[in-house]
Length: 159
Image 1 (cartoon, one colour):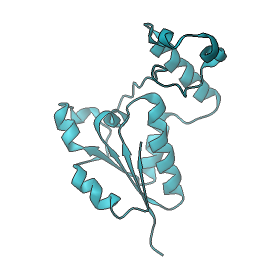
Image 2 (image 1 turned 180 degrees about the horizontal axis):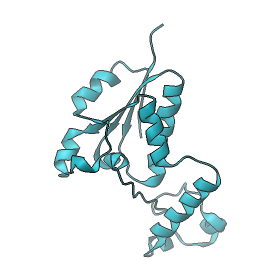
Image 3 (image 1 turned 180 degrees about the vertical axis):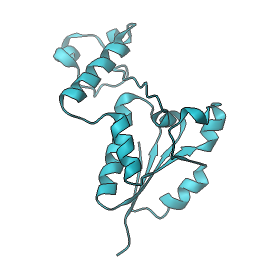
Image 4 (image 1 turned 90 degrees about the vertical axis):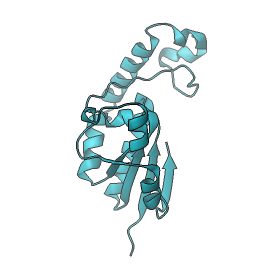
């Protein structure tokens, strides 16, 4: 029986969008899938050694607001200075309280499970990123390299 393959394109660099690629990848790897994540544009933030990701409620109407804020707090208020930090702190606390693994832990789990983490070389060059800022064990390649894998994958997700 041929091994199933999962290909993920990770394009978001915020705290709330960082979890899906790592959770799905580690789960698929545990189920025996061969997995590859292609990190491009803002998704490259997920490969930094020092993760300093934020979450913003602005423009995210599906985000559950604490204390029923979505019923009484105006959407425009989420743009106030300091709200992003407050919402990030609240999200991190909620995740810790619920026993959700940290991003660093999930990322390490993916690497231990041999999930291939591919940094988009074009984006690294475009934004003049320093590869010394990225974790060890990742590959650098272009979109064509990703399509070699994605073209043969059973599941391909864009996150």
